Amino acid sequence: MEQQSEVPLLKRPGNGDHIANNANTNTTNNDNDIADTVGDQAEQDAAQDTSVSIENKQTRKLFYRISESPPLHLISIFALQQCLMSIAGSLSTSLLVSELVCAKDVELIKSQVLSSTMFMSGVTTFLMVTIGVRLPVFQGPTNIYIIPLLALSEMQEWKCPTQEQLAEYYGNSTQNVTVDTRGQYPVPLEIIHGKLGTLMGSLMVVGFIHFLIGATGLVGVLLRFIGPVTIVPAITLIGLYIYKTVVRFSETQWGVSLFTAVVALILSLYLRGVRTPLIAWGRKRGFYIKWFPLHQVFAILFAILLGWCLSAILTVSGSLSDDPLSTDYYARTDSRNYVIRQSPWFFFPYPGQFGMPSFSASASITFLLATGFSVLDSIGDYSACARMCFVPPPPTHAVNRGIAIEGAMSFVAGAVGIGHATASYGNNIGAIGITRVASRRVFQATGVLYILMGVVGKIGSFFITIPYCVIGGGMIIGVGIFVGIVLSNLQYVDLNSSRNLAIIGVSLLLGLMLPHWVEKTPDGIQTGNEDADRIIEVLLSNPCFVGGVIACFLDNTVPGTTEERGLNIWQQEYAEGDTTTSGTWEEGPEVYQPPFVPECLKRSMISKYIPIIPSYYKDPSHTK
Image (tube, rainbow, N blue to C red; front, side):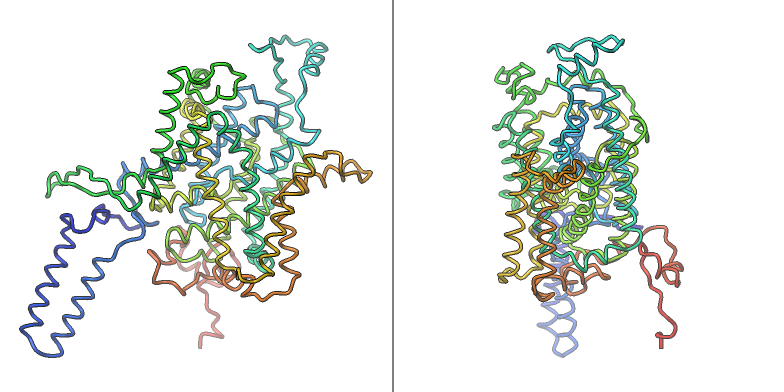
């Protein structure tokens, strides 16, 4: 059974706290005893009482720890906030997939892709938190998988047909077709399903490889050659390159986007030392004032709601254009209300819903690269989440389980046809640091809520109506936190070393230069082989690949000690948990214990050969 959390821990010290008052009373009585009693025993008793009093007065770093469960009404609100924090990523990625498969104006496909994305995010999050790494890590369409989508969109074979090509297509076809209100021909469903099928097959192959990396324990092998000097440039480039997507949403109304971001920053950072007085009631105490950091805990939720209200005011006042071709049209709150009316009440995603999967070498290579860096990013996310939750670093068996769950669910996501895999979402890890709520129950509820949004079509469609500018404001905070979490891995590295500074700087620079050159000169690569040109173009257009490969090569060839490279602490953290800073932990390594695994199996010889469970087996020959 997991511990239950009591709300009085959240009260401001000295405001009617019975525990503090009792501790102060005990301390006063003990001081009187010391004055009246002479002897060593009395002094020892006083020292013991003083230690107990100090322990009671210790402040907690988290409002709710991983294994604690808030009240049900707070769980639902916390889960809603986590959903709103990550809904921008789900919506933006599903829209990118829809644009890639030429379904930008096909609302039915867009709604199905979004519903399937939310459904898979919910299932993966619930499994990850429950039986995976067991940290409060949200699983969703991470930024790493946006890079392959952007790279594929630049390739000729993934270009959508023009209106002239569609007119010729329908002219040679016997089917009846009607143009939309703008006089545009719709893209045939067989073309859309064909492109989705290509993404499906490629993701299924890559997801299976991802699963094997975790299930076989290959993560430890990767950590021998890949450390913070490699991960920081590679993953940072994702955050820097993803600015195009943030601009795409924010430019609809920059004022609302910045307003949303500024509100979140003020509530979470500038007012983090302030607590809000709330009226509470208890059976014994009746009505009383309870001090609670309401604005900090719900900073993201309040920011999104206030940004939404500002968009509604601008919509009603006529400040935003009602022309669908205008940039600020999607900043209106009523621009996509028809999606709610047209969407079905219930939608059940299932494998093969968009047809049979197919295979593409270029798509598979891009997703394989994204998967490799997704594994490394997840390892960094696990470590960052453990630091945010003030628990020991995850041991090897927990990391292996987490990577295996991600891979298995990426395979299922490919079969369902959402066009991207699911991985650890760094934005929500940053939200833990802002709200100081790390309860596992909250993220399980977040997974269930995402499943409901995916199955109940009306709920998912409601979130589609969020103005793009509000989503952009949320992404400013989310992507910013994501980059900050990645840069936190530099704490392992000797930043006084010119070797490390040169490797990181050169990798970042080339990771920005080469993709920009490929974008500006699409015919710059001419090897004489069209397939080779396509593969090289895909590789060089991926900033994560360019920066990561250069950093990894230099880090493993340029002489440097393990301490200088940060590999000693990096690898130690993923052995069986670091025990050097146990004084700062809120909970111990028991948070990583997998459920439903019998103790006898953990202590048997078989556990040595199962990388996803802890092994307590002791060789009899070494017992003595």
